[in-house]
Length: 212
Ligand SMILES: Cc1cc2nc3c(=O)[nH]c(=O)nc-3n(C[C@H](O)[C@H](O)[C@H](O)COP(=O)(O)O)c2cc1C
Image 1 (cartoon, rainbow, N blue to C red):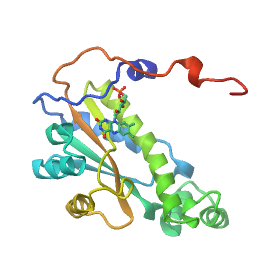
Image 2: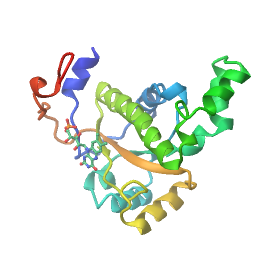
Image 3: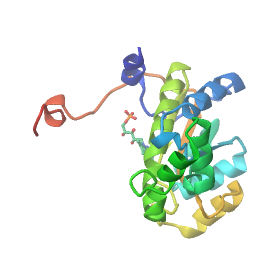
Image 4: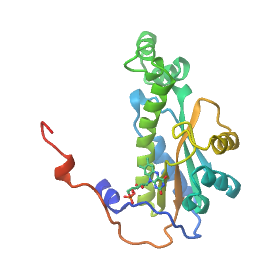
């Protein structure tokens, strides 16, 4: 049951030395790849980082968060704004078997293609899509017994902080100006496993029927 994984998952920030096998890593990546997205646009790229030099750069950009430096693997989760372009979005739509006129209507619609409104809108919607992929990866990591932590507090175009660190990361990862590193998923086996504690708002405070 997915709810069991949701209940037992918690952010893990201290990792053991146990390596993560390629098979386990591939299952986690596959969960992200298969996530749903807006008209199936899939405006994402995932860069698997194992190099300590790159992990150190990423940790620096993330305000020296230790779990980034010490993770076995870091998955860099990138929003690729070019995936909303007529050519790339159109190609995904054509794969679904849609005819040319329908594809053209979708890619040129302000309602269905946020990039027609501007780069900010495309970024906003790309971040939204990434959330699903990252969530799926966290749940598959839990299923595989691997601990992980999402790291969103980092230098990038969204936080507009530490532009030097942000540029170093872009160069190191080979990102172009349409590719934004939105967040990291740090992975490793939990050095100190214990049952999850959930500090969440109560259902009565957030769930309503018909009216708030
Ligand atoms: C988009 C996002 C960004 C996050 N960024 C960070 C971060 O930069 N550093 C960190 O230690 N945890 C980060 N977290 C983890 C949250 O702090 C954590 O999920 C929350 O406190 C609930 O705890 P739990 O994951 O253990 O249930 C982030 C979570 C999300 C969803």
